Image (cartoon, rainbow, N blue to C red; front, side):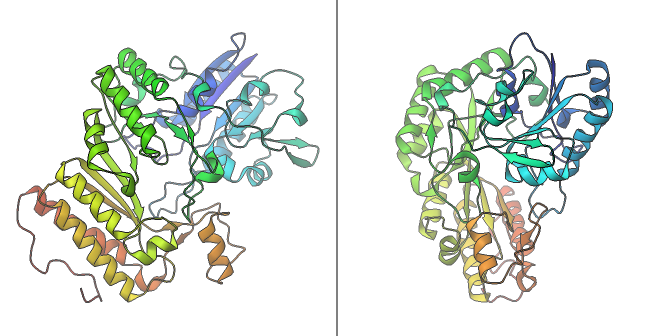
Length: 452
């Protein structure tokens, strides 16, 4: 039996920054030895469709497993990656008509049944995590009705099996670094850590726009710090990986697990660095000092709102004071910091925009003298089905319940749709002046139509 594992394109072709296919690599390590397998990440190919055609024709796989990671690139783009999945499945069926085509991955899981309907070439869909299920899909004579968490075809029907249990984080399979070599990803990247590392899965925060609780579970499953650092050490020693990015929804929660991880990294004396997304209200001088000693080189914050009203709307369980205190800590310690904010939120008025602008000014003032602000990234809310904010907008009549959310849909009312660009301009000016060690301009760039 022959298996082809494919990461379909989910990045703009030509983009230099690559991301290691962590999930697919773990699944690959579970494939029985008697099965011949090949791997193809189309995101690192110069000519991905020609490469897929070639391997389908020469290898003639019995099973093709398609991993679909992202629906779209976010950041306001109207691009959809769905064509990548559709074309890959069609190419597989055309060139190897008898092959069994599987599909899975985070993006597939969000719209699994819909995608099975729209892409008839897919025989079986895997919803959610695959480590406990994937090996069962390899052999002949499948008992599809007995395999939890899959979608499958029964004549004209698509059957959805109930989900099974989730894997213990301490039983995660190792990466298959022969089929998917880490060095193929680290050579080109200049500012993004190509190698992800998992400290936990799931999230219990329930931010109003987010689907992490649906994808990974609504509680945190913690991985033993010893196992986390073991994996980092192996990748560092065998492939020279110097920088990692924690894929956790929040790396510094719970605090005791985070501090144990940092202490283990310090104990090993590994010459490596790492980044991750942090919660502002869990950051202290003590654990920041510990993290920096353990190799932390950059912090990502995702407060997502600049006002109390916005934070409450998004159910962030944060205050503006939490955000400012965290900014002061990172500036004091001169640790590179990236901040993510969503603007033009539902129901915001001119007073809210004025408050947001003032809050942004405070952050720029804090970071400016330290020169540690790497970027402030502004976006509009991408609306997903099942997300609490989406349901609220439907209830209030601000979103048509028939809107097709499989394709990019952002909340961005016309009245303040310029605010994102105005805020970006303000951050750009502040960043240039900080880098050139110039004092900020008194009464600098103003937000159009706002009295700040």
